[in-house]
Image 1 (cartoon, rainbow over the protein chains, first blue to last red):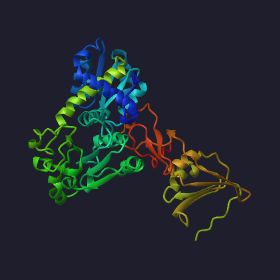
Image 2: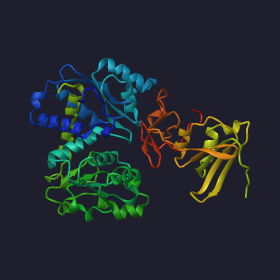
Image 3: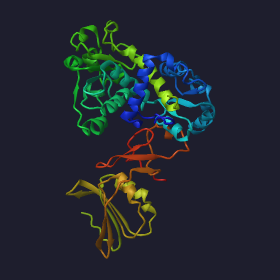
Image 4: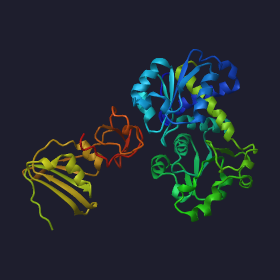
Length: 307
Length: 146
């Protein structure tokens, strides 16, 4: 039963609860018209303390497509935060008006604070570099839709694996399903943090390898999850020049990939996926954005208890 | 070689990771003590290489939980009549409030004044505690004014 729950960390929900959301998302994708009024009269509040057009639009589109309405702010200067109001007080007030709240905040743990004081469900839409659970739900729904299951995959994660919260959450989430393996492709400086390897991968006996070049491993992957590598993250110019092309996926590299491998990316992309990949049927990143909206529709409906 | 006499009745906090002794000394406010206290730093240890050690020549009320958070390998001996009467085994609680302060400047605890600094145990063996809000490790950030 997900009614009334908060979603702050992707691990707040069991795999069973994830499945409940994914099954509803399947139904919404199949017959969206049947869900067009299930949130009639309900109000979603979007509390965005830092700008994020993509995530905010995804939530707003999700609520509007369920028949609900949206109130909120998209930057703190236009909110009570500018007057110095605490998160605790803001959410207690918002809970008087809205039925469910979505919060993005630059401070890590801010949505958790909100959930502790809130009488309505709170969804974390990104708290600094910490968690972004609806991105994880999006990623899982995309994999499930493309591959039919969340088990038995070799998942390549490529790019900045040190600072990328999306990647960390995905590793945690996919580690809960059987027989998944990870291929971690990054420059040495931007490897997955030690605690993720120790506390998640090694603790659960999950197979993983770390490599520097995508070319070496692309043929073994079922899923390739791309992220951006910023030039300034490299420790020296020499390494950047030596490795930069290895983190750019293009049509040439795709020739060596499996026929049913899917390419994912949380977006926005800069140059890490060349435009010549977009036409490839294995390119899933825009579909992924659409699954993101559907999974948010399912999540909102479940937390409100309307489905 | 520094010689420090054995104590008659009191507490010996032993096997403290070298460098952390002063933190415990400060936390227990031993600088304000009116009884004999010895803080021994960088002593040789066959078990851990270098260690710190605190000898307190008095029976004081010590929150052993806190010591475990600083370093779970610490051993505590209760002394009576110059012999060890009891060895206290540190048991780590699953959650601690307002003992450790989150030092992560990006953490919500840095702006939201009304909330507790709350940490949860993530690794039993290593005794690692993480902030409830941002997951930053907090073992070395004892809130001395708590």
